[in-house]
Length: 88
Length: 149
Image (cartoon, rainbow over all chains, first blue to last red; front, side, top):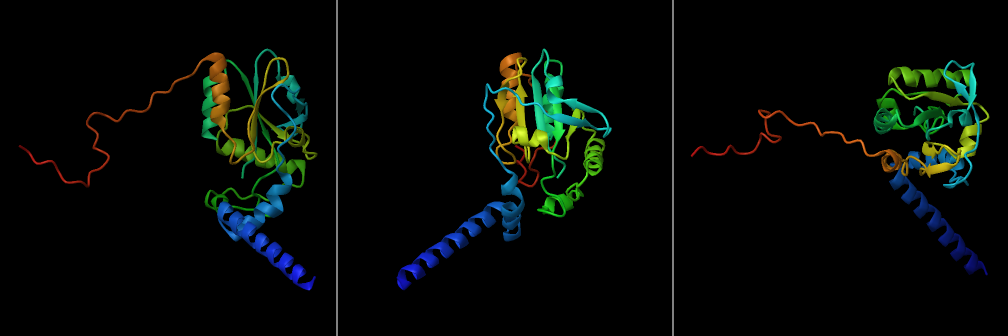
């Protein structure tokens, strides 16, 4: 049993190290791999929307910081290209 | 960013556009990238709507960003509804349904797919590739000169 536990822990540890090495390679450095795991992965979601789904509405703040409008207010006679992003 | 601006310029008479600013992807207090420092794009993750509005205004001013612009509020309602972070494109058709769903950025953020959707509907907009003037020097000037005959 003791031997089994050691092997299991060894394999598990090796897999963790290998996964971190692969992530570091993909992200560019160990620091970036940590950033990806700590800050990016919790916020990345594939979402449930599909082509054909009703577009959800949400209230949006205008650049003046005061006015508000809804995304669905912008969908009228023409398609709406909706682009999400940030500065950094 | 240039791609989506070009798409906007090409199809703004046919389709509506809206950019929604969502939570920062690489703020200084989270996962900052070297490229952000190099490009002098260094912001902490906004904790208030006023901070978010200020960064959004910095962005639109700095890049003279022409697309209509809005800001997700601090409840991140738009981000959550569209699984938008860090960047993503959708096209909503006239009936209010999702007509195109782009992939999650940065790896699957592909503005050219949105362009293809618009091109399929309204026709492609072709851009001439810039021609070099006839007397322009060849790209490589370090090779051996052709001997005169």
